[in-house]
Image 1: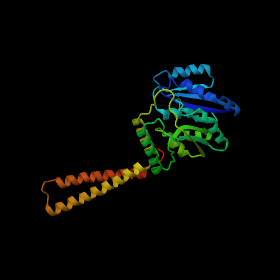
Image 2: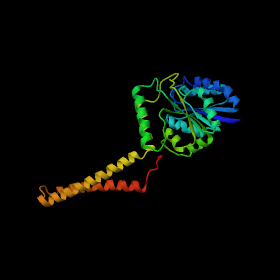
Image 3: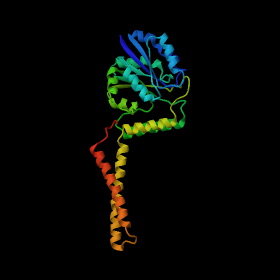
Image 4: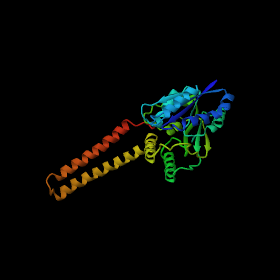
Length: 296
């Protein structure tokens, strides 16, 4: 029998732990039909409520439940990475504990793997229940990323994704420290089928993603999967060098023609511009000798 690993990152999801498992096990007949064994990996990301205790209670009742608990909150990306590392399945799926990733989609998703796809990803076609300002900036982010990056990112994409072991191993081979999973999925490639569904609101609790956290997360994605910020900095550096060089020539010519009204002023200003110009040139040389990998 093949093994399906279900990775469930959790941060203060005490109310959702058992409810998620019960909803997941409504697919028990499907798992039996496909000769699938299951392991449910709850990844506790340093929760401050009773999440760990609820998972431990569930473990006593269900043999297929496993728990990985962090010493503190490291973030969802770290939880996903730990889950992928500890998963043992021939197939791996990532799902949120708040049931915004409907377990009822699993049979449909698995059917596409049987048709030859390497992974099956999900995307929301609506953002019902989400603040309008947040939805607006999310769409802007995906449009921007698709313009400045070579990595394909789909608007509304979720982390809810079913993958074969080959895809998981490829993701794990990318030893990133600051990981941006949505970009990594697109970077490793493979034949992916997208499944669309309408947005589902949380069952219990509130989202842990504030606007500020999402903004910082988007900055990580832009700097990790696009050279546009580096190219922009390089252009600005070259322009500043040209301006500094032009200013030095202007001061020298002005001093030669009209003299030096304040002793030492032209030489001091030229030195300042020269130091700034050399700094820009050194930065450009470093970047050309040690180019940063696209995915870093």
